[in-house]
Image 1: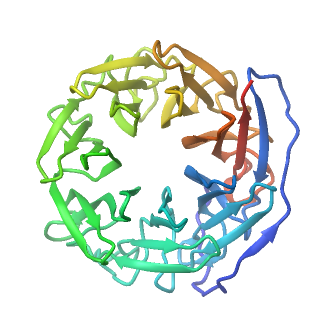
Image 2 (image 1 turned 90 degrees about the vertical axis):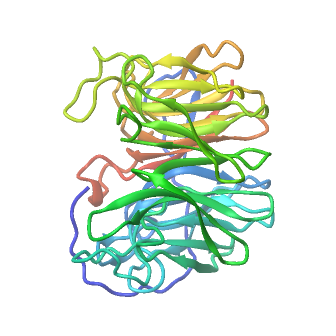
Length: 411
């Protein structure tokens, strides 16, 4: 993405409406993909990320990394809604000069009343990192009609750059963040709870890096992943009990089991599923930054770890999202790999976990580089985002497109 130096100015908070952008398919695939919306990189946002939220009426909610109105960093991103009828609207545009936050809002969660909650990596009230005016991020709430409220501003010692949240049945929020131990550049990782009373509680703060993914089971246990940590420095999966006792369920070794765990999901029985974005078959997918195409894994309720799939680039590379469907099938996205090296959607069938590629993106009008997990409706259709492809004339991304929202229809 290009660097920007727009002046800092406040944009009016309003709900903007656009017509649905639908693109024709350019090639055959195992399943049919339908583009529900194509981002332009202007007021509607650009580079959607994370897992969408889908309500009982079929409306989809999500966030974009960029686009929207100008702020200190250039473009700050938006929160959007795509109705079941195909109407796209911007619920909130991040501004950077108020108590909202520029750059990279993360995956949203939803309470029983339909309100949405999320975090931002930066922004807020406090200049908490010396000589760096990015600030520390916030926890926010937004209604389905676009009423936006900052619930908490991180300050540094209490946390910063918070990542994706999870929510319990009563509305308490849980997440991971960095915190400033002492002085600039000296950070640790922690798990926090933000209560319905507006109190931030640090549950555990002995990680060397921020947890990337947090999920919660019906007994109140929290599970998460941390990259670049553990005895191998290749990442861990951890468990945190309701009395805040931490244990490591798996330490990645980087070869057959992968490394850099990126996402977790729970099934109805309490088993954990996840992906590691690198490692696995180290003879494939070698780059300056990683070795191996990644893996998909399972951890049973008894703590037994097993590798379900070692990606080989043909069936995907750099997996970054995972979802367990109501029938027990596991669905995920790979940010690259496939025929066009533009990423794909895959399925691990319940029981035997045999992998099948559901759709390969071309990186053109149909999208490319899918991010986050998928959401499944009652008819077993899947919905997700891509961070690239779509409108290839989008100015924010140097001709690789600003992303789409897509549906993959069941067959």
